[in-house]
Length: 484
Image 1 (cartoon, rainbow, N blue to C red):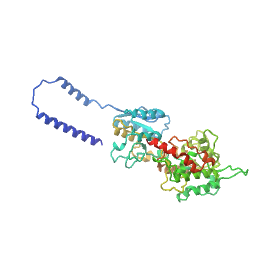
Image 2: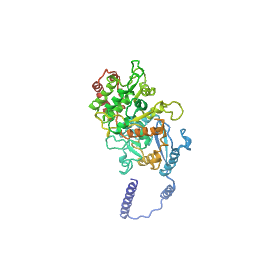
Image 3: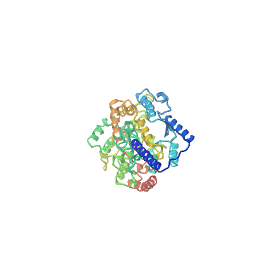
Image 4: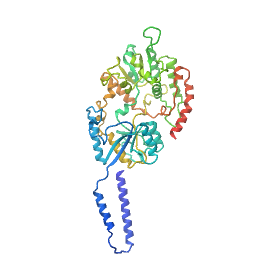
């Protein structure tokens, strides 16, 4: 594209030169004294040719401190630096980018609210505060849909990595043919924000239940089999007449979202609400039955001001067979004391498996992760967006195209270590996270500002159909507002 611009500029210059020459032939020659102003201008022009081009400053809006950029003088400026080669590669890459594009680039901590305000005000006014913005999809998508984010299809050649191999960068497809929301490609970004189904390995073995991963490999890990397992694991283990071990426990938002994807369903992935679809009806019906008919789910904590904490942590008591897990949850609870700080480890092994396939789902096509994590936009109206894109691209390409360096296990140590004690199980759990993370989908159900009250469903006071009827218009109204 740069060469094309140069050729066009050169062609225009030639046309202007020929035009001026042609006009000169029709003009009588008149002797005039030399103009000292003209001579002075020529000298200035000659001097400007020798003057180095001014360094471009590129600012990146974010809401936390990030490393590295042109302000850092040592690899140890990052307080989390632990001697890994990766940190040195990223630090050295800053200088490479500076020299290659004659730029300096800086992370600007605008705060979370400040980032949103900057996007909505400065870009709309035609003078973006930053050349690049880190965004969450909740405000990144509206920015893109309302023309505040640059469509890179209008900037880059068709053979750019963004549109072809996507080895280093990809874009979120909103179905409008544009490439406005960018995301780096790496193993860490694939496994982040994944919620595989976890199970207590020893509990399943004690009950002579086959490893669900083997069932998944054979295409036999279905909702029906999952409920069968949960029913087997739900027991009164001490004989006092009270159930004290349950097949399942989970925070309802994660339970609903994962079962939705496992059934090939969606609530708000297009401009038309799909909460009222039969597939979502099946999801809601299963949840209701797990709590009220089958009795296999640990009772929901209706009293807590933060039920997510209770429901996400119950598995640590050793009385839960299955639960939605995530690397960040395991790390937060220090399940396997990955860094030696909390000194607490679980007395059992946590194993990850893909969620069972629902009656309307398909193991080959089911999504495994709702799009989340770090996304970026280049604002509309930014100067020379191709250079800005190239700087961002090269920032992410600190490994110089060698993905084995980028996705090395040493680099990804945290993602492995937090999920299990033994290396083999760590590797197996990582592979499951990577698989479900590779099957990403666009879904807005939990980003529309709607307070879904699942309590009636969990208490058995509301049917699946009633839940759908209660919220379907709210979802549609929110989508109308969102996309407009």
